[in-house]
Amino acid sequence: MLTKDELEQFWAEGNKTYLDHISIDCVVFGFHEGQMKVLMLKSKNEKDWYLPGGFLKIEEPIDDAANRILKDRTGLEKIFLRQFRVFAAPDRTKHHNDLYHDNPFFKQRFISVGYYALVDFFDVTPTADAFSEVCTWRDLEDLPTFQLDHELIFNTALDTLRLQLSYQPIGYNLMPKEFTMPELQKLYETILGKKLDRRNFQRRMLGFGILNKLDQTRKGGAHKAPYLYSFDLENYKAALKEGLKSGW
Amino acid sequence: MLTKDELEQFWAEGNKTYLDHISIDCVVFGFHEGQMKVLMLKSKNEKDWYLPGGFLKIEEPIDDAANRILKDRTGLEKIFLRQFRVFAAPDRTKHHNDLYHDNPFFKQRFISVGYYALVDFFDVTPTADAFSEVCTWRDLEDLPTFQLDHELIFNTALDTLRLQLSYQPIGYNLMPKEFTMPELQKLYETILGKKLDRRNFQRRMLGFGILNKLDQTRKGGAHKAPYLYSFDLENYKAALKEGLKSGW
DNA sequence: CTACAATTGTGTACCAATTACACCCTTGTT
DNA sequence: AACAAGGGTGTAATTGGTACACAATTGTAG
Image (cartoon, rainbow over all chains, first blue to last red):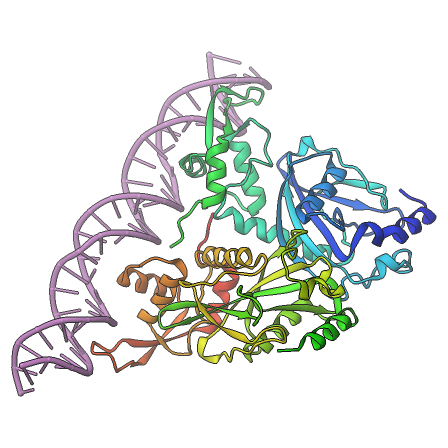
C-alpha cells in the first residue's frame, strides 16, 4: 500500500497515463469447497470492501485493460472475461472519502465498464493493489459491505451469470482440468442457489456433448469412486457460440 | 445541417457541455409492412450511413442521455431502451474524415455505449441531426454501407435482440396497441429471419399468458377476419423480469 | 347470389425432452 | 462382515414441441 504522498503523486500523474472518465470494475468468481467465491479488496482506513478495478490507458483496448487489471490481482493471464454492463450514475463515486475526493484525477465522474470473470480458484494468487492491503476471496454466503455502487455491480454480474447458465455452458473456466460429475453439479447448484437432481443433471450434461469421460476415478471418499471428466474444448467453444438451447 | 463554421463552433464548445471520451450509439428497430427497419442517418458529404448517436452531458445519467438522443431523432419519449455493449477499440474513429478529425473535441478517443431501442414505426418522426440531412428508416434486407464501426454495433445489437427473443417477450414496444396474431408472428419471423408454424406460434404465444384476446376482429382482408389482441402489461413485465423459460 | 381463393381458428397424433423415481454398485469405516 | 454414504444406470410418467388436417370466415370473380 502506498503512503498518502505516493498516492497523491499517483493520482497527479493519472491523466497522463489514463483516459479521463473511464474506469473498469471486475467481478471475479471462483469456486472452492462447494462455495462460490468473489475476489475482493479492502484498504486499511475503510471498513467497506470493493471489487478489483482500474483505469483504461490512453491507447489501450478495453478488454486488454480488464485483462491487465486482473493479471495484477490474480497473476493469471487469458482469463475468461465478459463485459456485462456500464455503471454510470453521476453520483456513483460521491460517497468516496476525502483521500480520494481531494484528488483531481479521482474527483472526476467515472463511467465504469463492468466485467465478470470466471477462474479456477487454485490458480489465483490474490494480490492487493496500491490502495489496499487486503485482497482475498469472499464467500457468496458471507459477503462484506461494499464501497460505492459495488454491491449493484456485483449483483448485476451474478444475475447475468445465472441467466447465461440457461443457454450457455459454464464450468471450463471455473473447474480444474479433471473433475467429477458431482463436483460439476455442485458448481451449478451454487451458481443457481438450488439443488438439482443428480441423475437428471448427469444425463443432461452428457447430452450436451461437451464432456470427455476419463478412464479414471477419484478415490478418497468413503463411497464409490466417481469417474473423472474433462471438457471437450472444441465442442465447449461451439456450445458457447451457438447456445445450448434452440430457443425458437 | 450546420455549416462548416457552425460545426467547428459546436465542437469547440463540446467539452464544456459533454464529458470527454464518452459517446452513445443507438440501434433503433422498427417494424413496418412485414419488414424490420433501422433508423439511420447520412450527411451530404459522405456516402456511408451511421446510427443515431451523441454524447453524454457532464452531469447526466447515461440512460437519460440515450433517451434524449432518441427523442431528438424520433420525437418519442419513454422509449424501450437497452444497453447491450461498449465499443471501445482505440482506432474505431480513425477512419473519420478531416472535417471531424481537424477538430479537437472529435479527435479524442471515444468509448461508445451501445443501446438498442424498439419502437412503434408509426410513432416515429425521423429527424436529422446537426451533421446530417438525411434521417430515415432503412430496411434490414437492404442496408447501406456503414461509417466507422457502426456495422459492428448494428450486428451486435441484432444478435442480442435475437438471443433475448428466446427467453424474454418482445413486441410490446414494437406493435401498436391492438394487433392480430399473424401480425405478431410476422414480427417474430422478421427478427429471427425464418418462418414459424402459424398454429404452434399461436399456441405457444398464448401459453405465455401475456396476451389479452379482444372481442373484435380486423376486417379488410379478403379472408377470415383475425381476432385482435393486446398485451397484458402486468404479465408482460413479469415475463420480462423472470424470463419465459425456466432454464435449469 | 354462388363458387372460389385466401387465410384464420381449432384439434390431434407423434416425437423429444424433462421429471421423478428405483435399484444396484463401490468404497472406507466400524 | 455388515453398514453408511454416495455414485452409476435404467425406466415410467409427464410435459412440451413439431407436423400436420380440417372446418370456418371473408371479399371477389363470375
